[in-house]
Length: 120
Image (cartoon, rainbow, N blue to C red; front, side, top):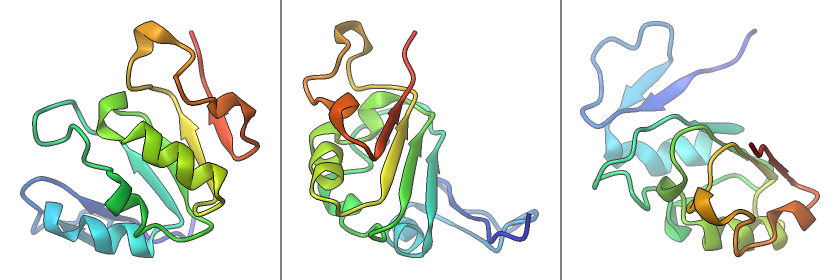
């Protein structure tokens, strides 16, 4: 498809296998600064809870789109809501939420034109 693929993993990788580069967690700010689309597919663990914090979201491009396919608690939902509502990032596609037992979220993502949500 002619796109650059970059990634971060907890330990990094010496074999990018079709990706331009694969870094460790310390390279997450660089990944966010360079990416048009950020797809999160991480499992939940003590090290991933809150991984995409308000500080990390500030590294994203103004037109970048966040796609969270991993687990809801990985993303600071309040920070994401504010970034979207203030137009600091281009959009978000959310398949998971911080607390899926209390849908809708306390943040009204469905009222935002730059947020696309799945629900079951």
